[in-house]
Image (cartoon, rainbow, N blue to C red; front, top):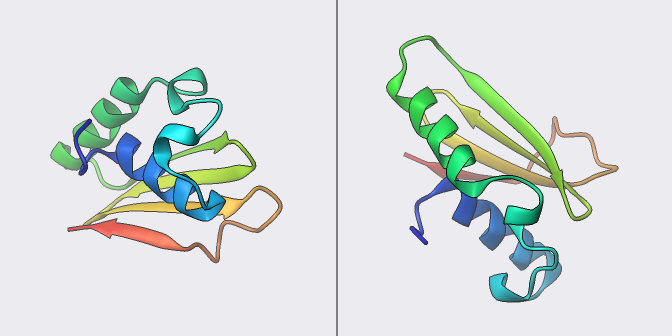
Length: 92
């Protein structure tokens, strides 16, 4: 798995929040969302000049939000925490 792929970064970030290795996450991300489709959507949004896009889904007890503007931002918050104060991982 590509360490720069959004799907990998989601898995890595959630695993860090859980205090476990990415391989220990259960269920795996692909049981919740198609990682290849997620990566393709983000990549298509990056290549597009249509403006910003956002993808949001729930994985384990977290709300995951991927925003694509000048940079790709992945925010992972506890499901009951408002997403407007995210901890973000930015890709430039």
